[in-house]
Image 1 (cartoon, rainbow, N blue to C red):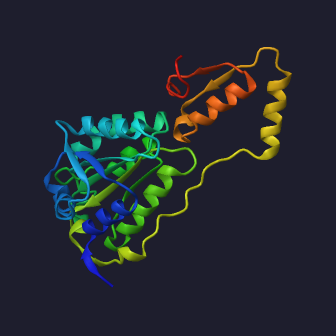
Image 2: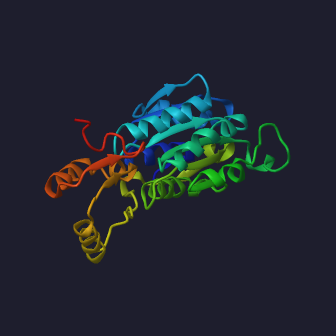
Length: 247
């Protein structure tokens, strides 16, 4: 089995998951990850002026097209805390983004060391999953799980915190055998659909309020087809703007 740095394994997993763009600001604690990005030359990195801006850029990238996953990268300490606003915005609107943070070496965690912020605890309320990866061999699995969670159920952001020595550690990993985890997408049962149709048919003034879930499901064309078939008017929410043509 091939041996490589854990940071390289993370980049390879991102490639397999379809990532082609990333936004961020380099720094000492995340430089091994950036070195892997530079070596692979497969993911285009866009340098931000500020890490909070990078988190919003990643969010905007996800919003721009169904299926996109925006990636935001930053170093330890304030870079992670600067991402909190972007993470809050993402989880409030069900936007999947992946924030990757550098961290102090494991031996310095929880000792008030320089920039050794407990970002895992800080970001838990604004993410679907927040994790500090303490075992190098678990880096590929952590990234695999992150993509699964971001895409499954109600979409949302994930933060992965990578201690410096974890990024640098050599692990065994075979990218050729890697497969993304199956994604769970909620779907209505036939009985639920029939009940909804009965309610529409019985309504004297039916109205479809189209939300952001239509965009997440890439179902705008189906919405238009359904509206034309039934003659039911449609009004989009702010998150659903663009689900149906304005004309």
